[in-house]
Amino acid sequence: MCNVGLFDRIFRGVLGFALIVAALSGFEWGWLGLIPLATAFMGFCPAYTLVGMNTGCKVSESQA
Image (cartoon, rainbow, N blue to C red):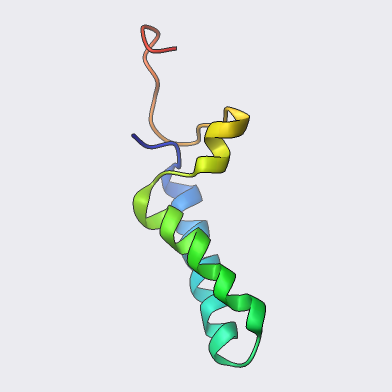
């Protein structure tokens, strides 16, 4: 099961990494970067499921 596309995964990975680097530099909220990093790694975003978005895997007509 995936709902996060390649471009989205790359963006989330870069954003997550940047936030974690900021956290190591003293920005406490930067640890939230673990969330986009995890969703990039898994290829699945629970929030996308809630709003019905899918930037990744194609859904066949029989599943829709």
